[in-house]
Image 1 (cartoon, helix red, strand yellow):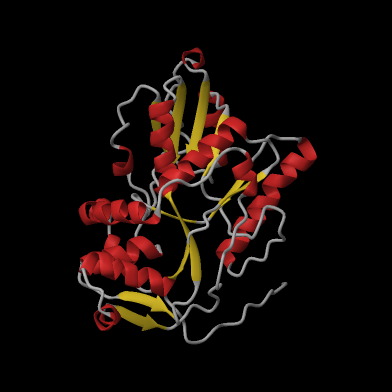
Image 2 (cartoon, rainbow, N blue to C red):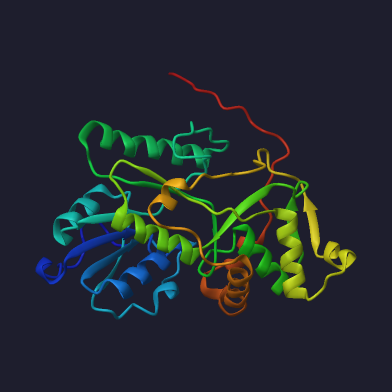
Amino acid sequence: MMSEAAGPEPAVEPSRFAKRLLVTGGAGFIASHVVVSLVENYPNYLIINLDKLDYCASLKNLETISEKQNYKFIQGDICEPHFIKLLFETEKIDIVLHFAAQTHEFDEASPKRPTNPYASSKAAAECFVQSYWERYQFPVVITRSSNVYGPHQYPEKVIPKFISLLHQNRKCCIHGSGLQRRNFIYTTDVVEAFLTILKKGKPGEIYNIGSSFEMSILQLAKELIHLIKKTSSESEMEYWVDYVKDRPINDLRYPMNSEKMHNLGWRPKVPWKEGIKKTIEWYRDNFRNWKNVEKALDPFPVTGHSHSLMNCRM
């Protein structure tokens, strides 16, 4: 990992590019698709990819554009303030696309009701970012999306996990009844949404990037079993399902209103059958793109007993 002392490499002269975009977490799932699209479609923009290269990131996601003149990769941690300050000073950043702040809500104005610590941290981050717009008119845009699927996603998430388990002749682990419903949207549709927001979005706004396509986790498992194991037999499909203890909180639905995005002219285009076929094919060939990826296929850990948390003042 790049140290604060080392700092980024000397910047290319700013006059070469019309805009200089920083994408944080650009070796991850959604961000890597955004980086590739920006590099290929905006040759007059310099796209700087800043990534810590944690367990779920892979530079293999970016091999197609790694040698492009308008692309630069920097390994570093956004939690190192001195390094980030130096990066902004040397690279003359115009726009930041930050890919670690997505939450699931009903519509843009709905009150936040996070049901786990992860979601709570994202909700808090939204409030923090919004406060800069409200107080200082700092130009920010917040986006939220339905469950995104497609190539490059680390297989701890449900779709790549089920696909990878079935490819290895292992059963799909269903938490609880599997009746929880989720909306799914293909990654290229989400990329198009981000590009639309870059062109037409208004500072201070929140945009939901959602899909009307919805199915239960059990339905999802059975569809993937049908596609990968080539069976329509209910008994055979049940063979490939293993029911495990549910998570402490497992929301039944994450509905999302995307009317604002529709008003900008964006709608999802990739049908489920097309998107899931491409995804299955990609994981058949690229499952080993991450180190120690087998760990991602373990069921979500559920403890038998909870421990109390005490706020102690000395």
